[in-house]
Amino acid sequence: MRQGPLSGLKVVEFAGIGPGPFCGMLLSDLGADVVRIDRKGKGRASPADVTSRGRRSIGMDLKSPDAIEACLKLMEGADAIFEGFRPGVMERLGLGPDVALKRNPKLVYGRMTGWGQTGPYAHAAGHDMNYIAITGALDAIGTTDKPVPPLNLVGDFGGGALYLAFGLLAGVLHARESGQGQVIDCAMSDGAASLMAMFYGFKASGMWNAGRRNNLLDGGAHFYDTYQCKDGKWVSIGSIEPQFYALLLEKTGITDPAFQKQMDRGEWDNLRAKLAEVIAGKTRDEWTQIMGGTDVCFAPVLDMDEAPTHPHNQARQTFVEVSGVVQPAPAPRFSATPGAIQGPPPAIGAHDEEALADWGFSGQEISALRLAGAVTEAG
Image (spheres, rainbow, N blue to C red):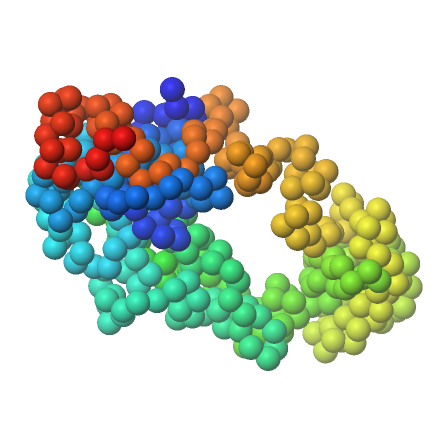
């Protein structure tokens, strides 16, 4: 029995990389029955494949007409499906939205790409950094010398997977109300642009200057930056509001009157140098003792070995260990219908018979698929 607020939601995922698996993980963590269609072949499950957790895998030969028909039957019983191929691939397989929606008019058909289904770049290859580069996001992140890719957090996962999950659920709500399915064109470039909404508002109001580390929230302000400590480790300080800034000065023992010019941009570099000298006088743990948990808006900068052991993360069980792999727990939290990791990452085809049977295939139909070579061989 699956656990979470999406229990009862049936989703077909066509296996991909990056944001697709992460979207599947999010839906599964909240209870959706996500069946992943993998390319038929051998593929062992690894506990370290965190974003594949919680799904069941059916290994399909998508060159087989029998497998294509089986996929369409799965779509008939699904609330939603999603895929992450380049535009036109699903159509060439015979699994495009026109065919799928004829079989299931209430189906929500999610399409995840970097550039979207249309536009001059639609058929071009790319990665996270490229998708956020055309939105203004990458130009705004980094050092004064160069833009720096913010991991895959802004394009793949923030602008892609989260927007796809949001879009799929919005589409399902509409379909349940109206009986009408639809196609969700989820472009990571669109999502990254959407994430920049506040900053485009800042720009329009004159609150944002061109250039990195030249603004309130990009490390330009001395009171919103990271600082290296005596032991070489780092802390983050975000004392924007006047009362928080006053507390920062109190906790650091700073009495220099120059710091009263908090919002004087012309003083920021000078004040940063002075604050850096103060912070360098103590270790990260010493500053955590002084400022941790206060309204300074402070936190130690932890690496991935340290983060799971931080007292706040431990108190909230933000990280869990499954099969020896430390990984983030399901989020967000629900008071009445808490989510859960529904199972380990599956090997390719590990659930052919089980998942097909649960989704309405008879034993005879499953045997016929095996005989035709459309799904993974038994055993």
